[in-house]
Length: 255
Ligand code: GLP
Image (cartoon, rainbow, N blue to C red; front, side, top):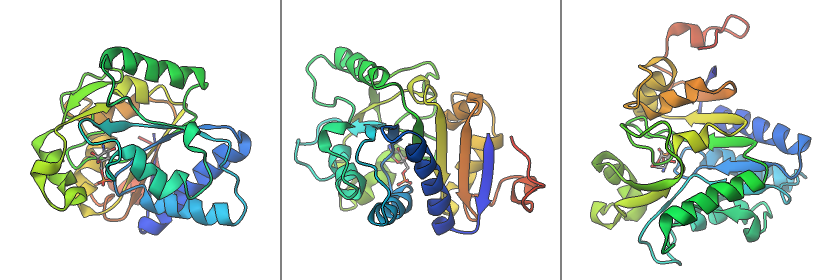
């Protein structure tokens, strides 16, 4: 795990965009794993800027981490709609190249298996962008999730319902209680993982991800078993990390 604590959220967005750009320059039809939530928005804005400056993202294929169950197809908070609005439509990635977990399928287990198969057929995810829930969740893998689980139907925790109410006019009752989420096993199959954490409310979760117990109660700890995980935190989210992570360049250590 390579951990970098950067001065602010803007620096996190720029460093994250550097990794996406490096991936796409090496492989123009790269498979990108995309996260929703507020943390990656700075990265997505930075990619829009680089796209305007000539970075071609139009051949990338994208797979979302999760999708709410029970929202109408045209609801603006469906993650499919969110990612189109925040990134893919803005950088010219055709909708046919953007895939979301199957929230409306009649036979959900079969549709989840088909989603995993589509990821494999695309060649697997080259770079997976991840945010971090305040309780340490990754995608919608809540504390206690089976680290060996694949894409499946999940129940959201009360904490997550409260956290995500801000996207539904502050109304906790309007947040879907269920979602389809890639599992930790699915996520850790990506060739490279990029975990972003910004703001003081993520400080505990960032510490637990990097140096907390290796436990299903800390879903993000599963990322430590991956050989190519990069963690980018701003100073606020990195505040509880051991001091060596904030040491000057060259004297930093990896977890
Ligand atoms: C949601 C998403 C996660 C995201 C998390 C954190 O629950 N399913 O993928 O990482 O929220 O969101 P935010 O970045 O808004 O804090």
